[in-house]
Image (cartoon, rainbow, N blue to C red; front, side):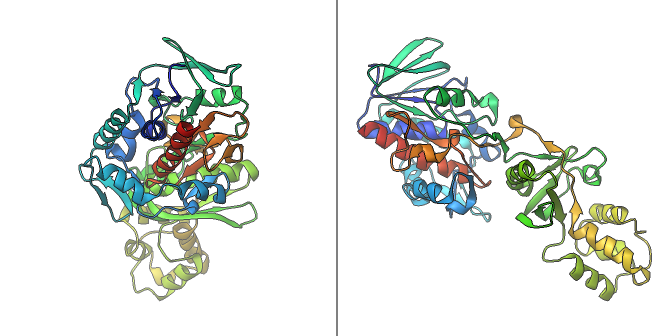
Length: 408
């Protein structure tokens, strides 16, 4: 055997798994096909790397069952993450959003700490070394074939990621490895935390660069509220981006799979509904619709909402008809978005779908169908909201997989 544990994929989960397998005494080799090690870590959080969130629980995630996700997260929490990086001289700061970043505001600080920890644990990292095939040997071990030959080990940890940001190395090949070793992949594998595309004629595309706090509401074809997020929304030349749109993207996709009539609506005035805003229009002393809306939203958006409602922005406000008031309130509080699609895996931060957690023993992250195989990170059917939640999943699942693989 070339090693006791081989880790395929040296991103966040892979490095963490390798570190903790090495710390537990195993001889570890980590393989990664990307030209730049930790490429996804380096681009995360706009190059600052949002390491985790100050408060993490299963409600921030989708995919597999909340209880299963909770069982893994509780094995390695936010406090342990902070302590790990502190031990390597990395101080983390909490921002108003609850996100934790290195005080250096440089993702290299995080990657360098991980690489130092891997070196201290005796992990040997080979990159770029693309794995092309994995086979189960007669003796129960694994042969990992790649660009520069074959390696063998009795324990294997798959941390290949999903399909998001393929230039970082996560191109979906890991799913083929998992299938070859007996696992299934969810029927629906789609981009998550990804910008949304609006029709070419949608008015919000004319407001490129505008950012404001917005509530996005996802409704079924029968009008039932399926999901709601309030956060910063960025209007772009193609549609919508920013935390609010990214968080909503996977839920929009999941709803559309089940219900072709599901729709997304935007409310630009926090705390208001169509009926309450209608009442405020009636009671307002503003001279005209534009003046009223400018009390709540930027002028560019105010003019656009008047256009959507087919209301003259300079009309006398108190002379608006009931239908005009309602149209204005609807445009401001329930604007239909008619989302056409998303920008795909190239622009996605994570992947929706993957290997179901039901196929993994949660106390070890070992496969239920292929003994000796462990899985961690984004290859599993778990995806979190924006804000460091996906990194915390990587740390937690990698910690459990690494320690268990070494003990196996």
